[in-house]
Image (cartoon, rainbow, N blue to C red; front, side, top):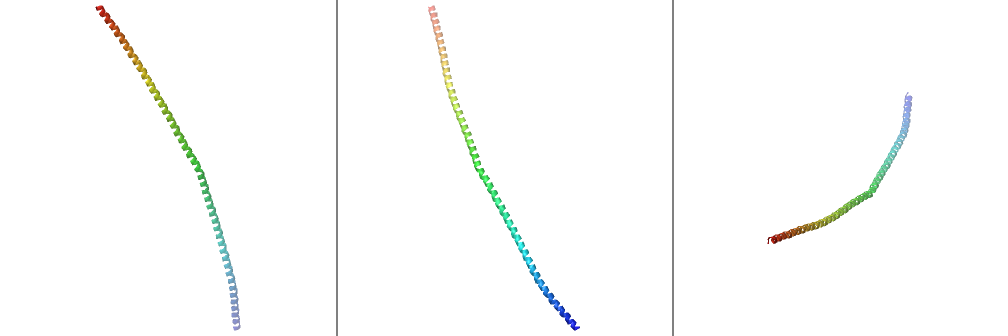
Amino acid sequence: MEDIELKLKKAESIRREEFAKKFAANTDEKLTKVHERKETLEREQANKLIKEMETKLETAEQLRTQAIESKIVKARKESEKIPKVLETKLSLEKQRENRTFEKLEKTEITSQKKEALQKMTVEKAKSHVQKVMQTVEQHKQNIASKTEIQRSQLEMKHQRADSNRE
């Protein structure tokens, strides 16, 4: 029995050694496989992150480029508006100047007409005054001549009456 027990112990120890060898070999293999899987997974994740970052950077660069282009387009539009605004401003100023000049000319023409009208009025008044003076003078002369005639007639009547009295 002891023999059997020894054999059993030996067999068990051999089994344990083989099991330990197998387990150690399996464990090492499994560990290396796990490490390899972990490394590949980490590499894949890193590559994935790198790709995501690259796409994000590309989209950010595209967005930046689009924003810059839109600002450039807006600036061009605004810069195109500037000459138009200046032209409009200048044309409005010219229109104002023309209107002011026309008003000034009208005012000058009106004032010249007024002056001419005043001169004509003054001349008419002078000629009217002269005519009135002539008429008054003639009237005075007529009255004076009539009074002279009446006086001479009265004197004649007085002289006749005196001569008749005498």
